[in-house]
Image (cartoon, rainbow, N blue to C red; front, side, top):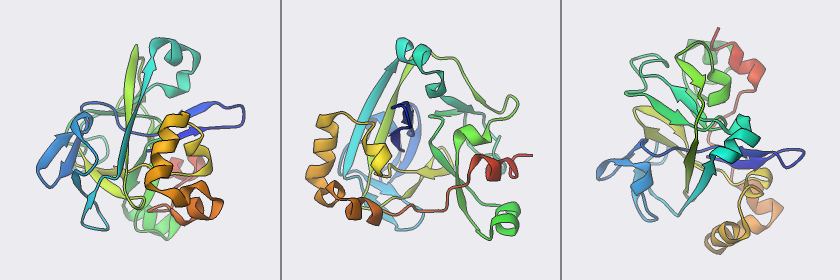
Length: 207
């Protein structure tokens, strides 16, 4: 889940929307009901405590000014093996775990992360018009892959660009919990959980 800016301070947000069900120690929990300290199931490191959680509301004015922020609808079963288990909406830059024969053969990686916007195609995975939504981020001691609606997706990864997307108060909250992130070295140490495919690479998986 990354909130990012690009060259001309163009906002880029990667995270969940309300209604996503996250696998926790107490069962599936709506993402909007999660709080710091909740124990979440991760793919690599067992059950992990949420260290920080934040929200960013995108109203219709922001959607109109920045159409690239429109959520991506991922239809039930569109990712294979009847996944996701239900229709879900995530932000365009939220990364989804992909693991199949193509990833192993073409990228020498059993599992990779792909931004939702790079999976868009037909009616199964598509950008939708919205009058607004709330994007929800949560963070652990490391970048994790978590189970949401039956598919594996990322937690928030703090990088130089992603942290610029937050306001001063939210950045201060993160730095209070993770003081090392105030340094370039500290942010570099918060390594991604998987290799992330480019748009061109991802196109080879959705042909």
